[in-house]
Length: 212
Length: 181
Image (tube, rainbow over all chains, first blue to last red; front, side):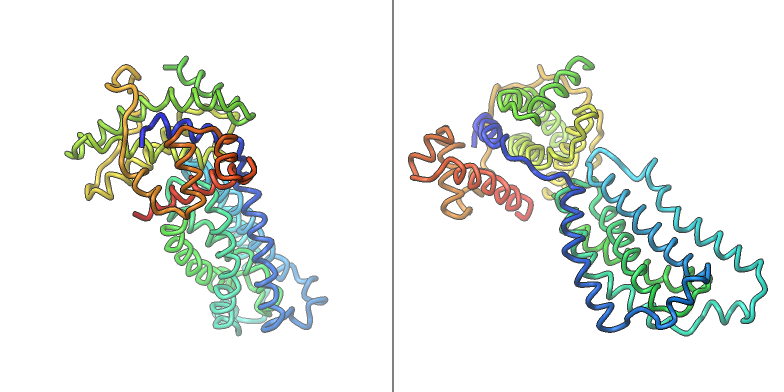
């Protein structure tokens, strides 16, 4: 086909307005979240002593970490949906949850503890944690990738990895309300491993699905 | 160079605001630059330059379908060259070569390098035939027979809105097919 004709055709389609990527991502996440919520309440549910647990700062800290991860990853995802940008200048946002968690570990170290460090780190729920976070994150990851397909990331695998972080952050927020292990050492170990797994899946899926 | 970039940015802002004539002018203006860069990339990869027009059309389709990712407060050229670079790398990779494309390939290109006013390519035309009937007919009418949306609507007894929808869907599936090929 003649390029001039293609240009004329594209100009004829100028009236079509695509939604911004942020809007598409929001819709996709809103559609996916109920699936994860349903899975969570059907299989796990909030821990029974939650009303007491909320007075424990280390229980609350888990949400600060997971929400910081989810929010910073959403911001970075939207940033990376533009083709002319890279992680540079924006990637540091992803360090926010790491900073909060490190401060939490420091805080816990300074307090007297009933249990030895290794016991707190290994906890009682490591296996459920390692399973529940990746499983709960799958619907959210699928939604995030569908939403982000409206973007044009320069590196689809990197954008997919950040989508993985985003969905792991949201899934971990749900899971944190079920889990009775509140030590930041437990979070730093098992939540991180689960998040790494989801991030790897996101990178792999992104390298295929986020190409344009 | 600066002036050119400002002009493009202005045209793209008007285009986003709904000015199709500005959009047409912008695409006409960027095409020779894209063509020269595609030729240079092919030459460097040791590929025949006669495929450059397929790459140009690939880039134009991506520009069109991804233009909502351009930030209207940012200059247009860096966004355009990022899209073009991505498509050029894809095209060269598909042809079996791994090659680095320098962003300067685009930035330093001068429009005057383009040898032909317009050129033809085969891949878009070939994929056009594989589209669903309605999308193909509408695209054929507008792109190949140069009919207006209005005339196309009359020809197929469709509403203008339906023609516009078919046109946009056609362009989207065409781009998807070019990517999967």
